[in-house]
Image 1 (cartoon, rainbow, N blue to C red):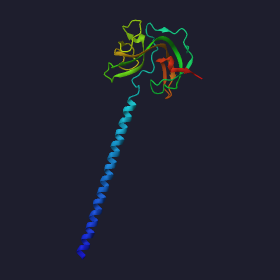
Image 2 (cartoon, one colour; image 1 turned 135 degrees about the horizontal axis):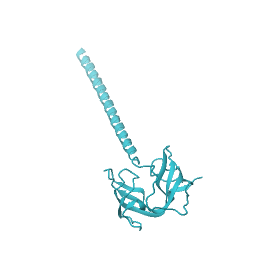
Image 3 (cartoon, one colour; image 1 turned 180 degrees about the vertical axis):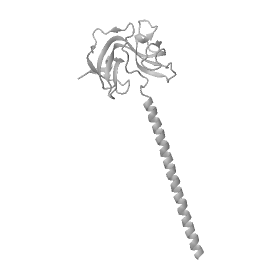
Image 4 (spheres, rainbow, N blue to C red; image 1 turned 135 degrees about the vertical axis):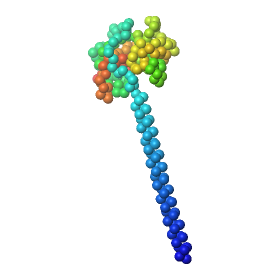
Length: 199
């Protein structure tokens, strides 16, 4: 009888011990899973942060491409202010811009592979007709190719661009303070449709 009781106690003790070990393992597994998920989340956030226009030169030296003509009667004259309604880069949308220059031209969205080996860029806004090498005065059509002679982004200058869209309009060079606090001067380019009157 005593032996049966003793065996029962040993069995219960063993079961409790195994159960506790299993609990520890489950807890460890959960912790490991959480750690992996956190690492993956951090990695994804890092990649997302890297996807902004960090290689874009927000400001420029203000140099005007050869042959670019000033707009005779722009909607937003030089010295006036307007609100930017575009998100080419972080902090641009909603910022108040001061017009530095207004020009009539053909503006393009382009796709190209950077000369520095970066990832292909698609539908980049904007490259103007006067920033393309070896082209005639006639605007290019979607699907045509030309060499870019502009350095808005790293690896852009000298790259072969495919024209995605073309639009004859007034483009503006602007100064603005981004909504993130960055001072941007002589930014190229903002189109007339991307501006609205400042209140």
